[in-house]
Image (cartoon, rainbow, N blue to C red; front, side, top):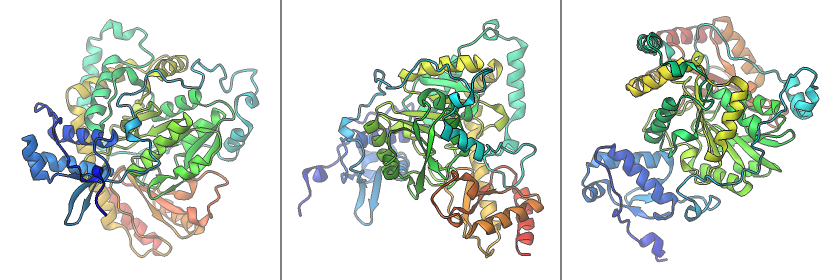
Length: 517
């Protein structure tokens, strides 16, 4: 059968303009990705060999190879053995690339109230039954929120970066400089959306490192990612609304939606991420919470096909996707994957970011990247809750970023996490009864190991605690009443970045001893 005209049409690099003062590989990657998304590069189109494209664009071959590598990693292109490189087949269920605008929508109707809610939990004289939907209240009553452990980090605490490597001396100098001669204007009440300079620097960082076309005006500073999720729950959910959350997933996010009165629907996660077919079966659901860069806790990286399918779901249902990119900076082959928000052309994704996973958790500094039409409502709601974030922390972080310390620190943290991951994998006790093999880990700060039964999981956790090793059970991440077999839900969730290599090796020796007895 002859090739279709679209497939036989050669790729023409004309029109790709690169600024030689900027990163060439990043620009080329973005240009090719945009052409795939808007239909100028159809599925099945053969791309030039890296050497030929480099010659055509008058750039180094290494720049083309790096751009191709990132497109491979994100699923936009694929290699065919002995036949070259082709644009990957995008799912038919994804929104048509030609229908997608290349700009974030600013005039869409939310279909949801943008006025601040006057229903606040735990107000004197207000019955909780009027605030929290009965189903959500039952979930909260049956399943108390577990707070993160405090105290010095242990192996293998989940959700903690290598903050022993944070440049505290640099931070102290910047902090002292701020307070030595503060700008009196900064000591007055500030913008509820956050410090303008910090918002601008965050937007610039996301544009350069994550491929997000966002502006400072779309960003609202928060007290960590959890407050960002809670704001989404407060403003996008009315009592009784259905919300789809990953199952297993980040339980604190589920609690935030439950407090807002949502009916939680656990949506299964498979090897490609959240099951969009199952999500589509949830009636009247218009809000979904996901962790696509590194699913929490399974570690799955959402495929490009699944990302486009999820965006199509949001467009079809005029819904919202809350993307929690809690540890997206940590990828161990190639650059970090572009988030969902970078693929969104309809203004349906609310992006949650945090500094806690690259600095230290006690910093309590995060941010939201919002569709333009939602920024004012979120800023007003935040003004009611806390007025604005603490000023000096924002100012010091802005200076930390502006002077290049932030990017250098991210590179240092990525190298440290990779080294600590390798130490864990090299020393992991093998052939422990009931424990599966270690997975391959290409991203994030934790891994999940299968265990053959819930009883065995609990036994392993108790034995680990007896030798001062901290491990989470996968069973604790499932919603109550999940349909999956209890034994199928068992596993060990291991953070590998919290402590240095010598502490990891010592913990592994203790585990090996106690688990074999």
